[in-house]
Image (tube, rainbow, N blue to C red):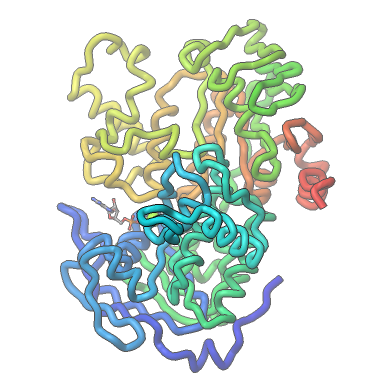
Length: 509
Ligand SMILES: Nc1ncnc2c1ncn2[C@@H]1O[C@H](COP(=O)(O)OP(=O)(O)OP(=O)(O)O)[C@@H](O)[C@H]1O
Ligand SMILES: [Mg+2]
């Protein structure tokens, strides 16, 4: 899988980008201090660091979204300053954001050609045919299957990511920044993306690649730069590094016990789902979860895992089936019903269904918990802040204060905010849909410990994840979904990642 860089390019490649002495402060937070960052032409340059280390901020400065307080930028040896994204685009810099940024009501083709629509035959018209065929051509060139006429709001997160990538490719960028491009892709889609990245490299493009999945960096990157607390602490060839070394640079210490030992005692059956079906494509799914048990759910993107969660939580109407929790047969018509019956759902897509970005962190934490903490009719701000502070400290939230808007947090810390929310909820059955998406290695360990602690308290946990290593590291059992159906139910110790992968992907070829 690992095909090394073309050595002459990696060693002798001209400097495509040089950012020198970059500093940036947001109020009390020094996001970047004196960062010098150099990228060679025709290389994949990984940019890594813990949540809040400053990766996205550095790239937003490159893309002209933020102005640095100090420092300069050169592209191909030419000094430039970007006061708006359009200027960075003109210098061949294309950015794929961590938080997907598509026009949801437009089609795939319209998104890809947004701002560069080919003219139609009549004045002020747009040539849809050209957009559709252009999109199809791009997709074929990079082996992405996507319907140009589909509306973005109907696409899965995985497909939206693909549209973002095609959009950047369409602009003929010379430097492509990918901010956690695979965090929402299945392993299979991710493999396809790596192929695209290698193709881009071969054509002489430079790819700046941000990811918390260090394994993929080892296979992909020619060079690695590490940010810690806004400072560049290491930059050099991948060949001289290893995952433990990268982690050491990231956190400044050794990280042992990535997966904490399971201590929870597994009790009686808590949750029984019987023959669950929904309009969203869930077909006849049955499983149970015991008290104290962590049950993983694997499957490709689009296999129906999130849809199972949504049907249980009352987001998508069930068309048939039963849900029993602690022997009570539940009738769930809405998320409110689910919450009041002790079910919690941590959603996969924090922007669409999770957070109110413009509101305070504290508000985002306490929102679904108002009734429980005796504030059904009135919110007492000081109490709200104190509660949020306590929940935040339990998972090491990095924020200026609980009153800061959720939008000011780094991506990974936004994810932790959602977890903090459910820490407060007194649930019997907790569903986590990709809870470690986009969070750093240290925070991942915190999330695993948290799942463990919840299990120890006797909760039943359904843990949906696209990362097999973490399912194997933490789950007692692994369910496998394929095309809306449950096709496997394994005791983790009695199966292998290859078996699970095979079962999830069979028929697809
Ligand atoms: N618009 C903003 N307003 C206030 N603070 C901000 C803003 N953007 C970023 N920050 C702060 O700057 C720091 C760096 O954030 P950044 O998003 O660059 O981190 P990151 O390395 O991309 O992290 P992650 O891996 O979680 O995405 C964080 O402390 C963050 O809270
Ligand atoms: Mg980021």
